[in-house]
Length: 394
Ligand SMILES: Nc1ncnc2c1ncn2[C@@H]1O[C@H](COP(=O)(O)OP(=O)(O)O)[C@@H](O)[C@H]1O
Ligand SMILES: O=C(OP(=O)(O)O)[C@H](O)COP(=O)(O)O
Image (cartoon, rainbow, N blue to C red; front, side):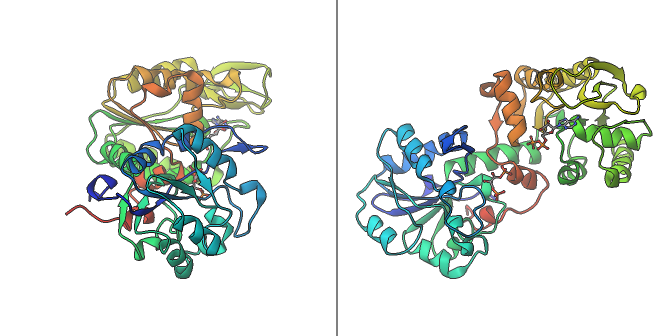
């Protein structure tokens, strides 16, 4: 069901509480990747241009219900102001008299950033009183925080009990692009799943088998499947308690006529570090003491060919330990193939996005999702609480 968006309502002179996911990576107080802030700009600019009073709420990190200086949103306010080219006021709390006074002093088109909502333990408990205190600051609630929409928290869900709740433009774009990919995909529909978190993602694989034409498995994930096929995997990352499930998924793919692609060759080494001696071997030749850290060139070519031909391709998780150049070639080949694909290309998950940035092809993707966990839960077909609370279009 489509959600009412900002575009459908009148915001002039209104106090609008906008939940964003401004949870950006910080190193010693410096923002190392501002993608999530940049992605909020269309919603921000729209509200400013139409004379709304924009009250922005977000979490940062996991401060566990306490005010922790390291997780203050002050550097985010500064960066947001730079990107908007106008002042962004910042308060040191998210509710209470200081915040109410700051809101009362706002003019049309002003932007005010509240302090990290997770400084209150009530946020993650979806506490009614805290949600109401946030809601009392505003006339309208806009949820633009797709990356946090899988959390039923006060600022992502509870607040909608007290205010008209609509989707922001980033939320709308994420739902539309991811929704298009899974509900009505251009075929062939190809999913590429890699990375290291087998147990986190095996649910996605189960669900995707009902939808895709080809399922490509790489990265650490592939080793559990290779083990299920009876191959020696040496010291490779294998989730032993998922080997049976991997075997079942191989059988199910066959029964459902899904083209399940597993590596035919891999790059192996004896030490998990840059510069360690490495070689490429067939998957039937991984020796004890060696570990597979990347897909091999034959596999990379096979995967790239399937990706290039896709009508829709959805990628989550790198094909190898791409942080080390020696084991980055498989991931780079898939990133390059995504860039060459003429179909719809969608990427979710922090590391896959980092890989695409490294190869320099991010701007050639149809959609880069700001949500890791959220995009996976969406793809699994789970209902996202932060979306469920938004008003449906009639
Ligand atoms: N063969 C492998 N063995 C061990 N780790 C791997 C392998 N392939 C990829 N990885 C690691 O997986 C990590 C990313 O996995 P994950 O968090 O599941 O992806 P994402 O963040 O894109 O969702 C990377 O740090 C990468 O080094
Ligand atoms: O970074 C986030 O999730 P992600 O790492 O799964 O993309 C979101 O801001 C949600 O944060 P949380 O996982 O602490 O609830």
